[in-house]
Length: 131
Length: 424
Image (tube, rainbow over all chains, first blue to last red; front, side, top):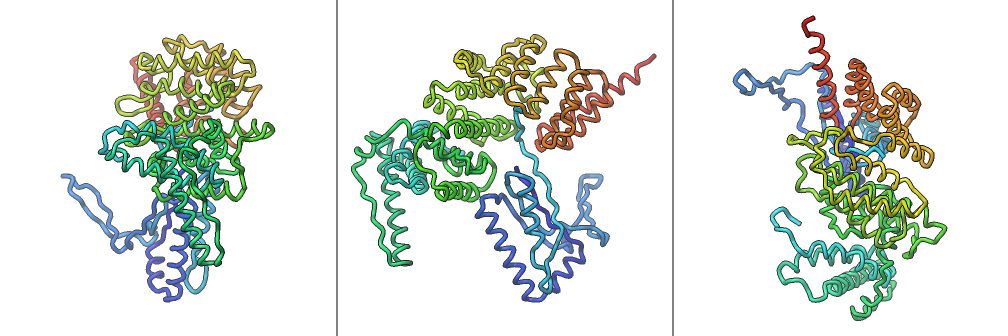
């Protein structure tokens, strides 16, 4: 069963991240690299992407003629997707354990980031036969 | 293998030969994990060379030779690595002439492989992947594609599965009579899971994907050839044939799910139904009735009805009662409740469902709500039916199923509004 792990942050989280020390950044990057390798080595990795920062984010709606109408002003409370991982695991427990490991990524000043990770099931075309 | 290549006629042969070659190479060199890699490479070499150079005179001998050579190369490079690390020399394997190795072939090998790949030490997904590659003769890319994961992920899963087998020191031999029952149940379960994965994924625009249901049927056919007197193996094969026979009728022109009672039964594969029914009749005549035989018998009763309203529900109910006694599970209770409703009315079915409310594995399962919705609809309680269809839709993890359940809720909602708007 496939799950998507989504790491979200507010604009202030991203701005805070930009002010991390070099050591903190290196520790975090090394952790993320190792995390990714673990997913691949254990045969659960499906896909992963990191996203551009919120300052580049635009909300797009279709105008009356279908033309794009963009808006880039977001309230501070809005959460932005920073990156996602799709994994293929045997149980929700396994997905939660991996998400917890991700949430435990090192943060600023030697602390644990403890970022919330949203875990959602990816819909499949698989239906059980009900046996 | 790729989309552009026209159908390669030697592919079925290659897949059939793969476990035979692996069996003899694994036994000869007493190293299943490495032999499995070597055979996979020999298969890939055949895919590359045979279309260009034509099929060799003795395809099996050719595969054994290439696999044995690859095996030796792997051992040599492993030896070189170890010598560098520990300055310890490892004995090099001696390769006899291919004819000698080929002469050691034993039909039992494929069965041993099947038991090994479905070993209880493996997780379900590992067992499925390894079975498809080692026994099914599929490439890693094909398996990865079927499960929609990257090839590297599938390769890693297979490699880890083999590490587990190596770590638990599973010997390359058939299970002992004491182990047999439990081990065989695992084999049948893995084959069933492959079928069920394929049965589901035939929905939707997945034409480029390997037909896992067909692969499961093929593997179960070979299991049956190896265990011709086993009634449960025959039962599982019958179940697959009788279920897969309805494939063409299961989805509509827009790939929407069509439930059993609404299917165009003229689209059902009659030949496959006959084969399944014959297999089942033979299996049932042997005595010792099992889980898969009973499930197949239920599928057969459905298949026998020319119209949904001709379905022999009392017989289906009787079969579910047997199942309830023999291998009780929440899913059996759920399906039994449907049969109760069809025979004794929806009220009685709904009463049965109450027993599942506190069941941990099923209480949040979409199927419980889907069945409840269906029974409330039968009862004429559209309010409750709509409510449960919607809960079921929010709980399913399957997209076509979700569309189906949402459509059911919408259909009832429309019907309800129409009744309301009718002039008095």
